[in-house]
Image (cartoon, rainbow, N blue to C red; front, side, top):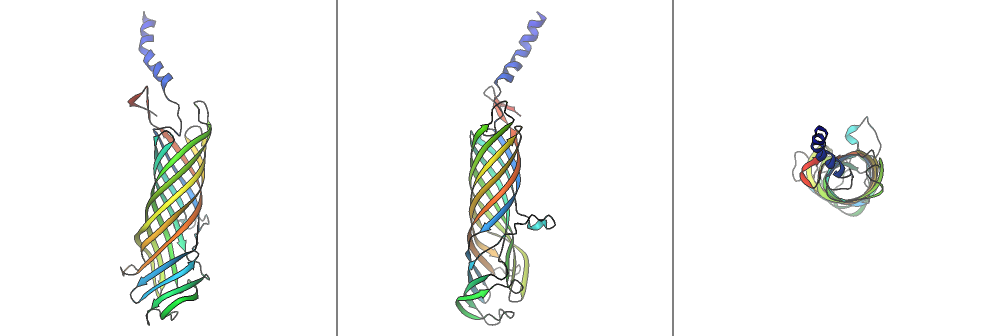
Length: 280
C-alpha cells in the first residue's frame, strides 16, 4: 500500500517530465540575446550642408568606417547588441542596437555645388556659387564625421534549423534571415570656416536593415553567429553646430556589413499544454 501511494504521488511528476517539449531554439517561447562586432562599408553618396551664410552639397562622397578592432579607442568600436523572443515557431521579434561610424577621409576628391557667402569660410576662402566644382577634402580645414551612428531597430526574423536541434543533440546549425527598421541618433564632428564642433548630438533620421546569418549552437544554450547584411540610412537632420540649431547636414546612403556575435538562449514555454507552467 505504501509503494502504491508513493507511485500515485510521483506519477504526475513523471508524466510532466515525459511530456515536456524539447528545448529548441527555433520554437515559440525562446528568449535569445547576443553581442557582436561589426564591419561596415558605404556606397558613394551626396551630403548637403546648410547654415548661416551657406548651403552647399558635396557629391561623390565615399564615406569610410573605422573597422579596425582597436580596444585602445573604445569610442570608435562598431558593435551590435540584440535581445529577442520567438513569438511563434521559426519566427522571432527582437530589439537591436547597432553602433556604426562614418567619416569623409582626407584626400578624397568630391564635387562642390551650392553657395557660400563671403566671409563665412576664412580658412579655405571658398565664397560664391559653385556647380560641380572639383574639391579635395582636407580634414584639417574641413571635416565631417559621424563618430557614432546609433541605430535602434526592431527586427523580424525567420529561423530554420538544418542540422541537430533534437532532444539529445548538443550541436545545431540554423540560418537566420532578418528584416528591420528603426531610428538613428548621431554624434557628429564638424569643422568648417575655422570653427570646430565635437560630438554634437541629434536624432537624425531612420534606417532599414536586412541580414542573413549562420548560427552555430552549442549545448542548447550558447551560439556563435556570423551575419552578412545590408541596409539604408537616411539622415534628415544632423546637427553640425552645438550652438546653432539651423546648421544642419543631410545625407542618405546604402551600406553593407559583416558581423560576428556570441549569444545565449533561455527557454520559457508551457508544458503539458498548460500555459501557466513555464519550463526553464
